Length: 349
Image (cartoon, rainbow, N blue to C red; front, side, top):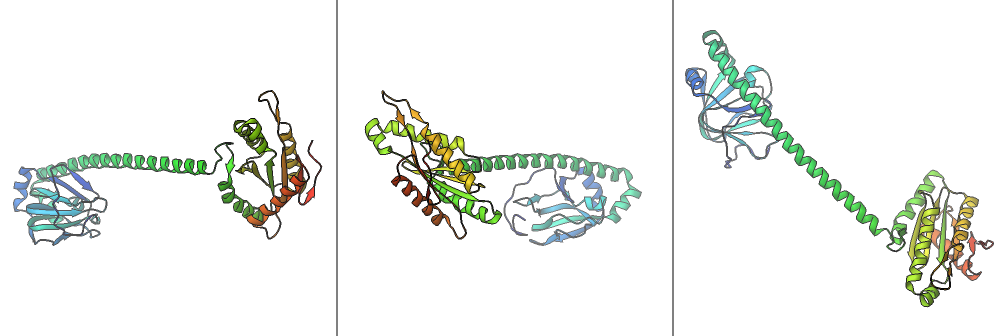
C-alpha cells in the first residue's frame, strides 16, 4: 500500500466512480439513501479504526453517513477518501464470500450504515423495486468504474511504453557509445581496447570448445618514411587501405584490430595451423598488391607479419608476446615476410 493504514494525510476525493476488485466507490442517490436510512445497522468508528482489511471475506456493504473513510489499495500511491453518501463493498453482496481487495480505515470519527445479506433479502421481499434500483445504480457505477479503470490502465500502459522506449534508446546509445569506444577512428576496424576485452573471451571459448585459435600481428612497413616524404595524409590513406583490406578478407568470427601506429592484430578463430597460415599469407600478399596512386610516384605497401597458434597454458599476454617476437624476426628478415610459429616462411610475392 502507498501509505500506512490510518495515516491522516490530506487526499482529495470527488464524486467520480472508482473500483478495485471488490471495493467500489460512488455516491448513493438521495432517494435510495432515505429509503435505507432505517435499514441495516449503524457502526461507529473511531479515528484509525479498520472497517475491514484486505483479504477478509466480505459479507456487507457500507454507506458513509458522517465523517470520512480512507481506502488503501496496493496499486494506488494514495488512499481513496470516501465522504458522506458514498458506499463501498457492495460486490460482497452481489458475490458473497469474495475477499476484500483493500483496507478501509476511519479518518477521524465516523458513522457508517451496514447493509448485510439479511437487509438485501428484506428489500427483496418488501421493496423489490428499490432493490432493483440499488442494483441498477451499483451496476452503472461498476461499468463507469471499469471504463475509468481501463482508461487508467491505458494511461499507465502508455507511460510504460514510453519508459521502455526510453530504456531501449538508452541501451542503444550505450551500445553505440561502447562500440565507438572500441573502434579505431581512422581505419574503422576495432582498436586495442576492443582487443584487450575480446582476446580473453576468444581464448576461453577456444579452450572450452576445443576450436583452434591463431593470432596474426602485422606492421605496415616504412610508415614513418611515407609520413615524412609523402605527408601524413598519404600515411593515413595507407592505414585506411590496410584497415579496409583486413575488414574485407576476414570472417565475421574473426577480429581485426588496429592497436596503434602501423600495427594491426587479427584473431583467426576456428582455423587449424595450416589454414591459419594460408589465410595469413593471403593477407600479406594482398597488402603487397596495394598501390597508392598519389602524386607522380605511386606508393607500394608491404607488411611484416608474425603469427602463432594458441597452445595449452597460454593467456592473452603470452599469446601476444609470442606473436610479437615472431613479428620482430620477420622485420629482421626483410619486408613482406611472415614468421609463423617461429619459422621464417617464404616471402609473399
